[in-house]
Amino acid sequence: MRSRSALSLVCLLLGTHTTLLPQSSTGTFTGLVSDATGAVIAGAKITARNINTGESVETISSDTGNYVIVGLRVGSYELTANVAGFKSWVRGPVALSSNDNV
Image 1: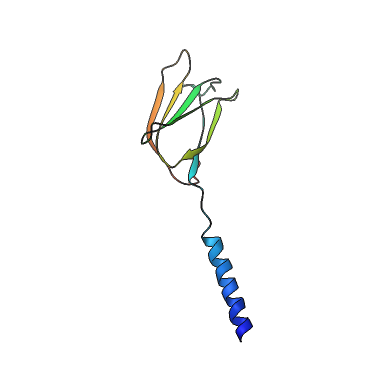
Image 2: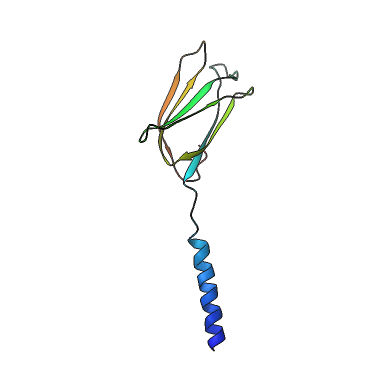
């Protein structure tokens, strides 16, 4: 009886341990930069600015117009895209939650 109780306690603790592991507190923005005709735009500067902290992260769209900004803290963001010859594009606030891929 005593060994069964000890085993049950170990299983209970192991089960509790896995539920107490920290979850990710970051998210990701992904997108495609294109013009009004749908043509992709390479080399656009994409900025994600955390509205609450003012922290900004930048990236450049790829040759296929794609961009990815990973590891952003949970919060509200303003997204901006800039490229020579085009009007700036601004969107926000955009909510980013834990493990989001927006």
